[in-house]
Amino acid sequence: MPAVLGIAPNVRRASAGTIADAARRIAKGGLVAIPTETVYGLAANALDERALARVFAVKGRPEFNPLIIHVLDAAEAKKFAVFTSAAERLTEVFWPGPLTLVLARRPDCPIPLLANAGLPSIALRAPAHPVAKAVLKAASVPVAAPSANSSGALSPTTAQHVAADLGGKIDLILDGGPCPIGLESTVVDARKSPARILRPGAVTQKQLEAVLGEPVAGGKGSKIESPGQLDRHYAPRTRLRLNARARKPGEVRIGFGAIGGDFNLSARGDLTEAAANFFAMLRLADAKGAKAISIAPIPNKGLGAAINDRLRRAAKG
Ligand code: TXA
Ligand code: MG
Image (cartoon, rainbow, N blue to C red; front, side, top):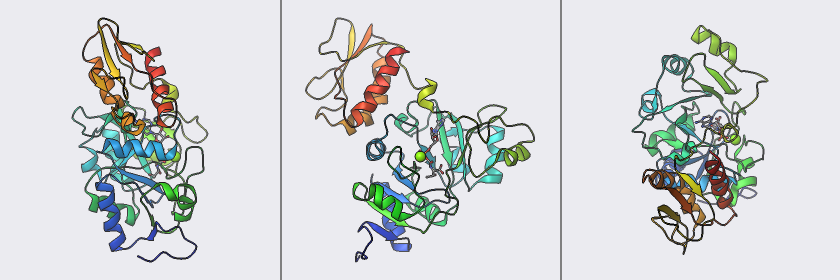
């Protein structure tokens, strides 16, 4: 396809052909920026740990912030989450649309824990944008999509915003014009009553209360909770010994690079691979019931800082 002057070469106008190409790339583990009715999302196959790890790396997130999983409809969402009656009613009225529900992960949920930052919950949304819907349908996988911006930057509402920020780092940007909503979705914890707004958005507290027929906590002006600050992230039962260069008797060991162990986050010392393996290996090590888990030093650069941040929190708990 010819590059258009003045536009980064990986920006493509959404059409039947480019949508099919985007879906193929996502299914195969690539990263594609797609328009949604709220903001542009950085879309990745939610079943692919390496693709998820790349999302964190590309955004430069200082920690593993959990991602929203995008699905076609409530029937698909029920494969991943336990639906409450509030979830049933809210999805009937507001899906597809700018509402994200935080629900309990199903025990058999196939989405890697990395997507949820190790939390027992999962955030789900069915977007209404025709391009996002077409991509989801063609990719046939659940799609993790945080806003397509570097950590700390403003959310992008045009393909050009994405190109200026992440252009060279991702596989493709689908241009569907400016996002109609331009503000991220409302995030609601619908696990128990009363439902709670974690992030205010286009769907208002009043609208939610009208559908549920009862008060909803939080809303405009309420403090946005960062799961990282809540200390509700995964912490193993077994004591952790960090920056451990050697194994002590009775310990199970997680290695990195040349420093091996019972598990190795990445034998070739690749931090993206290590991030992808992190939550799963910590769980496996925990299940060994050892005296302690000793963890090899992880370089504190790139995703290593995120891994060390999670390790420090886990060691405290
Ligand atoms: O409108 C949107 O929601 C856009 C478009 C692309 O869909 N996406 C978006 O993603 O804004 P992101 O990653 O920028 O924001 C996700 C928000 C964060 O505040 C995150 O903490 C919260 O959702 N979140 C995700 N999973 C969660 C969970 N399991 N529990 C609590 N909060 C969660
Ligand atoms: Mg964001």
